[in-house]
Image (cartoon, rainbow, N blue to C red; front, side, top):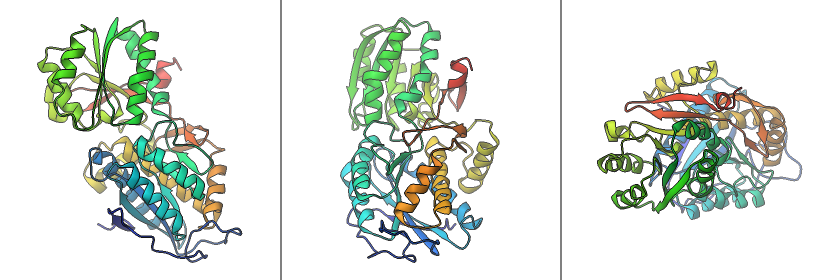
Length: 393
């Protein structure tokens, strides 16, 4: 199936393919922006479609592609179409930054969709900001990503919506908690070292132990033994991808039977653990089961396109990000980078409504999604409560 004009570019050596800028070329940061949209507007999405968090990049790419297909087929931009190039960062910050440097130099590129993982996004942001090209991030919920007017993010800091787990901790009855977290994700490090310990303290808990693991860790029996040696009432496992299922299986084998605090990177990873994965609870900014009309339409269309009725948050954020760009492009009536940037800044003055929710405010170029808390029941994730419900609203 053809999803608009999509090109896969997976090698770091990809060279910039345009020279100069004009109304027809669709990009560039010219002093006097050209008005009127060209027939094609080119953008790039830089995501990890291979590597340890490939699931996040693949899911984001599906959201981008689905939005591009709709925008082009609906003629939302009239006779103008969006040409999307997908670039594989391999979850490596140097590669991710290189792609942005190439996009800055290629005046045919009007905007960039940034890497979802924190360290890569942190490497990309200053390049885009200095190059004065709009870059729109999804995920990448760590400080040092939204650093200026040209950097935008379709979600808040992970530490912001992670606050929703506070109600769960207070209701759990636990007096202590042990924490295992990976050093592979900057956002998870922030949660494991700062956010979760503070929330635990606010809930009257002590942290009996905290152990860091690596992206390459495959056997978690030693850190689990260390954490359980502190005899905590509860356990937090903050890992990425398939590591979650492995750690949950080994945690059950070690004798722990209680529920487990997790993080959004556990989404869609626990099925291989079977019943051992049941009982992991985590906060997240989006869930496919939310009942809004916009989301239910998205879920139905996503299922028709990909044969999957439970799209990930990565897909939903990417979908809304592409539509946000299209609305800015239409308002700018120009493929010039500065004109698009000005239009995005204007859009951010009004709350966003889309798949991610209704009337969500922008704060310092980030979409402040309040989030919700879900639990894996062994076969699917179920919504426990929303952040608004936790706050008594």
